[in-house]
Length: 331
Image: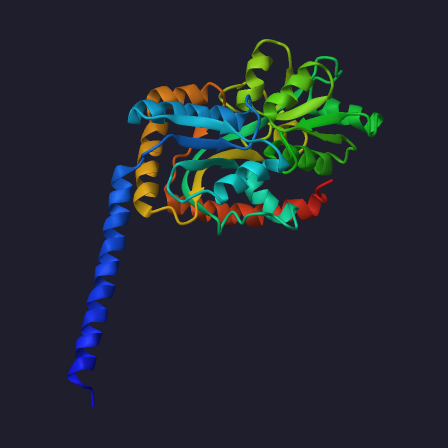
């Protein structure tokens, strides 16, 4: 039989538990309403000048103007984007340190045996921001003016032609490996710590070609300093409408594009995730932002957190197959 004192004790404990839950709920709500309380950092895991950096800065600048609050880009290159990505994964889940992620975050799940983070477990997706094809560009000294001519040249000079990338596991790297496998050519991969560095060496003639993001490559194509042979998407890019796709240039079925997304550390309050998503989606849909991105061949996606989470899981599975088929490995 239960005594009156036991009943009283249970009531007190139940009341305390309810109060604690209410406190947590209220605190979480207040935290979301007060956010941000200090400068917000967009961690870009590359050196300045590449496609991810361009997208990150475009969104960060407008968000800073909207909030009248500092939103800064912090470039943390290295480790195939793992240095910057781990920094965010290990940061306080308060919305003040965010990752501008991309293809490497899903590729690295298969590429690295001891990855210091799990893109599904350790991050809270905010929004998939944009997508963009890569563009196959060559230095003017390369005597090939089409994909077919490039393939013929590579086959006649086995192991001599090189292709740059923004790093191991980057979208550029995957485009290069897919091209190598489908074309049956022997080209040498030269990884850099970002698209900006890759383009710099390509302009100097230190490497033969680059499957570059449109933001980092199109300006030099327009100025004549680089020659565009094809884009990696299924359809032509409005940024370079006269440039054919690789698929229509002799490798049917070829398709590989880059994506960019905003992620917070796992455990970030939903109020903060929701606030970030609403602001970022609104910014991306502004005509001035859409146009600015489009001129560089970047298409707006602006997804919900749930849509982005589902996309990440699909991308992990997709690239696991490519990594295994192409035999890509960390040197």
